[in-house]
Length: 390
Ligand code: PMP
Image 1 (cartoon, rainbow, N blue to C red):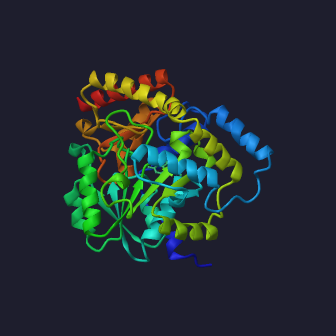
Image 2: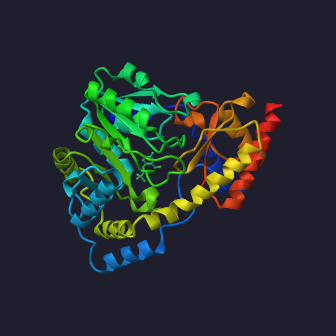
Image 3: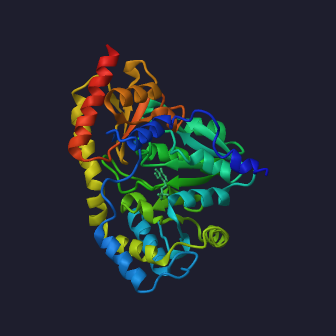
């Protein structure tokens, strides 16, 4: 049977830079000890207080179909949290609860783009971005950033591609680079969006993982609330990756259409999961800080270790759970370095090339193993890079 072009061309065929990851997983399956610094998943599980709330909700009977837009209480909690953090007036009518940030990214693009429209995104990028854009029938166009700018996008580079485009997808704090977009960067982005009438899709799933500076939501910039769709999630802020609960925050009339879309796609998020998310948000910033703390600690450890070595440069890593390591001094591509590192030391990192062109010659290390093992792995990466640079 013939399958649709849409689904068979979601991701391009051939090498995509994920080979190192799959090879590491095969080695683990074969019983080898591999130190995995690949995927963005906390090494702590979901906090037991949240699991207890989930258990209470499920056993209390919240296991039937939940309201498609999200339960009222969670929509209100998310709106309040956003208003408190950004100062932008926000009500439940601005919020659709989604099964995680990924489905919010898909829905936001479906709302912003028609078939064949151009949807812009920033390179390096989170792995699913181009496939998400292709999936809704639009054309993904990458805007390159530069390592020497610490991967902050330049407004003029976006401007060069903006004419006729429908949307621009950004992500701050950024996966994979750890960069937090500055006020100046975001002002420039907002100006291009207003000038070219672009929807801004702002992926802020790492908004609680800020190590340096401040996270600024572009929805709070002048005249941006009407054209910004913010993607949020409980995955990273509350270590609830497997619970699949996130949201879109946007203008109320857009959210009404998105609710209609949800009726025809997800039909909502399980009620007991939403109750647990609502409980988790009600715990306030203390719980969020507790969950972010291991990454804050490891990032400080990493800076001390990298300061003692020359062959590895660190993109400032202002936020998120990753380090972007510059290995260009070795003369190797990120892909070659990651493969050699895996063979020589059984340490798995992601080649920068798996996140697009802009991070070539870099690797991304997730800070997702315990402090001691993480520090030891980083020391090994540094001395290995030094031996290759000689
Ligand atoms: N955006 C970014 C930048 C991510 O890194 C991820 C997950 N790694 C997501 C969105 C999706 O997260 P989820 O669907 O778990 O909310």
